[in-house]
Image (cartoon, rainbow, N blue to C red; front, side, top):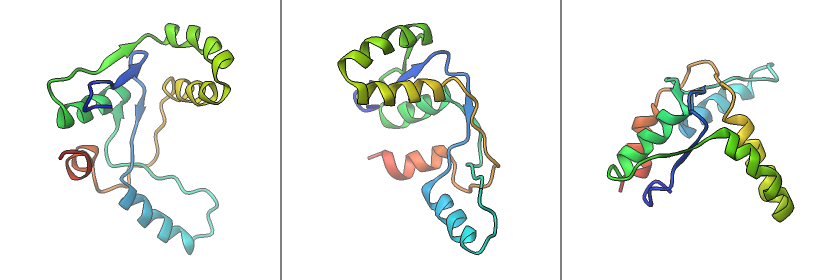
Length: 124
């Protein structure tokens, strides 16, 4: 999507999260095998807003393209119509819209940052 300039931020993009690199998560999973905890929280080493995540990806993949925004009010207005057209797509979009409206933060334990991941995996 970033290569085509189609990254979209829902709402203001001001909600925060700390994405974790899959290799860091694999280490957490291996360590959890011998743990008695039933819930293991794991997050990447940096906190970003949703807009920052899109901008980092866009900058590394296709810097001439821009990240677009769609107001959350418009998303909420369009969701009922999507439900009529495609229930499965509605469920996914409604979940995604709900997540975009919340801060989702976990303990900062990862070693690889989003910028490092993008350089490793997405830039070609």
